[in-house]
Image 1 (cartoon, rainbow, N blue to C red):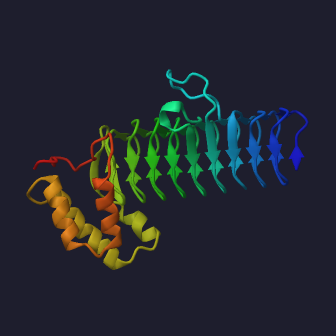
Image 2: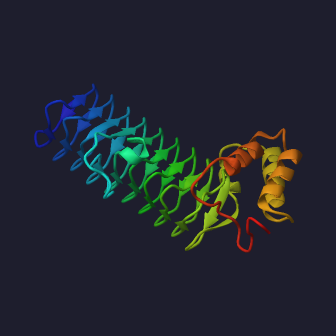
Image 3: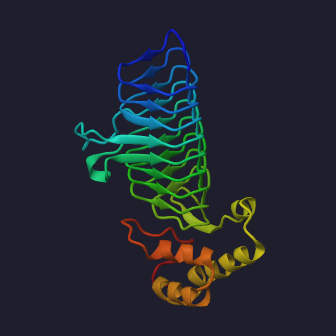
Length: 266
């Protein structure tokens, strides 16, 4: 353990072996820093916040301060951050609220670039990347390996499926399917994240099936419900396609992000 003489560590904070706390950091009384965590300098971690092993937090990050939610009234909510994350300069992460289950959760092996923001009650998967200035509003769920482009904003309660790609400077108001690619000022679905699929080792058959399913669901006749059912019958043995269909059929307070000129009824 290495704690710089200028750091402020409140009584009650739990600091594991191998933790490095640099100059002018502030660690609150309810904080747990697990083995190998590194706070570079000028980092603030407060509240009921747990930071997982080997996570690195860079200068001027604000982790665990109360949510930016006017409905928050001081309830004892939590922020849980997983292992091996890199949290860059000026990143902000807030704990949960009573209206969202009391917990904000961040997975493992994620990269949060400069000035990205995770709001209250979000659920962030593993291997997620938020590029510079990406902002995630409250109650958002982001699946594993999703990438949120720089200066993008995600609306409250939106779901971003696993392996999805959000283009830079996009406004995401609707749920984005797993493996989907979305972009635009008011984003529309722009196809599949083929580059991401290849990077994660998806085989040719899986990519071919997803392309076929995409065409059936978003470029054929009938209502969206009818197209989903047709796709399910055609690709019932393909796990990746079933992932997409389950996402589309699950309950959500938001609409589905669709391609331009495609509606649920067309």
